[in-house]
Every structure is written in C-alpha cells, then in structure tokens.
Length: 446
Image (cartoon, rainbow, N blue to C red; front, side, top):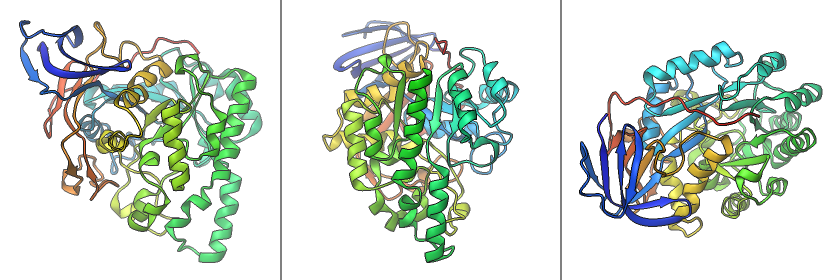
C-alpha cells in the first residue's frame, strides 16, 4: 500500500476549517500538519486549496444484492458511491433472500469483501417471527437492526403491537425504523382509487403516503423507545410535524436519533410535475414547507445525520402508472454535490455538512476509527471542489440502473478525489479499479 501525501488542503474537521497537509501510511492518517512537503511518500496529491473532508458515511442504502441484481449490485453501487464522496455504507436487509438470519448477514459480508469499492456494514432485518435470531446478534456484527413499521410487505412489515414491544425491549443493537402507518396509507389509496382509478397523478403521492401516516408511526416508535429504553434511530424524516419528537442535543447524548435524506432536502412536491415517478419514494417527498423545516432541523440539531436511502430501480420499472411504479431513487453518486447546494445557498455550513454526514454518523453508530480526520484513524477522505459547476447527465451515471433524479440539474460542487481506507478509489472522473473497502467495526453494546 503506497504512502500518500496530500498538500495544500483546506481541512474540514470537528467544527473548523484550516489549511494544512496530511500524510497517510498503511491506510491510516499518520500525521496532520502545516507543512509536510518534506515527508517522503509514494504518491503526492496537491489539493490546490480544495476542501479535504472525511468521506460521507451513508447510513442507509439498498444495493439490491443478493437477488435483485438486475437493478443494482454491491460492485456497481459502491463504485457510484465513491464517485460521490461516500467512503462507507450501511446496506438494508430487504433483499432476496432477506437478511433476517445471522447466516444471511454473514453471507453479505462475504460478498462485499470481494467486490465493494467502499467500506461496508449490513443491517439485520426484523420480521414478525425472528426475535430469537435478533436476540442472538453478537455486538458489532451488524450496524443495526432494521424494522419496517410500514412500507413493506410480508413478514418484514412489523406492525403488530405485541411484536413491536418485544422487539423494542430486546433489540441488542441500535434499532433503525422506517415509520409509516400502513392502515392510513391503505385508506388513502382506497380514496384516490375511487377518484382516479389506477391512473393516480404522481402529485398525489405525498397525500397518499401522508404526513399523518408518518407521524402516527414515528410518534409510536419514539413512545415505545422512551418507555423501553431502546436505542432508536428513525430513518428519513419527511415532515415538519415529526421534528417535535426529537431533541436538540449532541448525538452522543441521545438514545433517540433521527436521519434526513438528501432527496428530501433537495426536492419538494413542486418537482413531481417534472420528475414524476422518478422521484417516487417512501416516505414521500412532501411540501416545500416540510423541506424548509427539515433543513432547519438539520442545521439546528434535531436531525442528527444525513443519508441517501439509495434505492435503484430500472427505468422500465419506473415507467409505470402510479401504483405499479416502485418507490426508490438512485442517489449515492450525486448526493454530496446536491447537499452542497445548501452550502451555496447559505443554509448549511461546510462544518455542519461534515458533522451530519461523517462525525455524527460515526458517533451515532459508534464506528471504530472512522468519520474524523485524526491521526491514527483510517484515511477515508474526499477532496471537494466547491467551484466546479457541472450538469448531471445520464451518460455519466455509474449506478447499474443508468439514470439519476438529478439529471439536467446544475450542481456547483464536484468530487475531485475519494480515498477509501487509505487507497485512491476515485480520481477526477474515474473510479480506480481493484480498490476494496474494509468491513466496518463498531465499539458498542446495545
């Protein structure tokens, strides 16, 4: 493994931006200083004044492997991720087969070890009948336990009150929840079908997957977690009302945390007219007022981390009527550039973006030796150019599905270079072949 010296960088870390150099040996940050140009290194990278940040740690992706690899796979999506400055990901369990046993969980780790360009971890999924398997989960084997309290099918929809109480009481690791109230959604679907038949306009999606459906489920999750002492992480908040459920406090002081996703911070319901099913996701992209509240929630500390919920489908699948078009968007490649539009608008500082995409994620999940630019830590880094505008084009998309909801949008920040565990994984428009990420390690009990 080559030693790497990065010079002339603006290093963003732990609430400060300072000019400096950084030396990497054996995959780890060996030295940070104001003038390291005299140090020997196998590779010299001149940052040219660009931002040097910890790579984004994405706490929620669906890379579709095993079983759904016509849409995506670990290899294609991890390459897209590093091209977007994401150095680590946590993948969801709703694959085929579902990741609901310890054996299936370990099988995914074996897959990733041979093909992932980014560092990786996986969730164990909760079902209506696998609580004994969940109780057996060793500390640190999974990044968390995923529970679908809505927006799922079969035994991965866990909405029985008695089952939920046992899960919230006995979960041996962080419990990550998708919160939507299924009966409310089903009643809304019935009403809109009566009005439109199968051809419901996409603009109705946030009325069907409504704010009420979200609040009824997320408030129940928070109530259970407070009663039973659960370490709860509520995924992809979408409404202003839900923010009242969460406290403003440092993430390490919380037992209940929450995530915002890039697409809910970038799009709102006015975009359905242009994007249609291409921005159909669950929970739905909602109003501009909700979007503004989410941005304020990120800035003010009620929302702790920012993820993507990257969930690719083919264009053929998306080109269906409302009820038949699947929910989910491919996002990892352009997530950081899209998020940095809020920096250019003066809504989020660089330091806040780094905290919510790296520092707070590492603290929330207790990830070992990642998420910060510190001597001795793994060198998961991204060089960003905040003055490199580009327009997202379909021909540049690296995800297997071959499209992006950001197509045609002009973004003002570009990823220059991404380093994963001390290796250059992406450099100026090109993924680097053969780079393999590492399995994430966790310093935690429940």
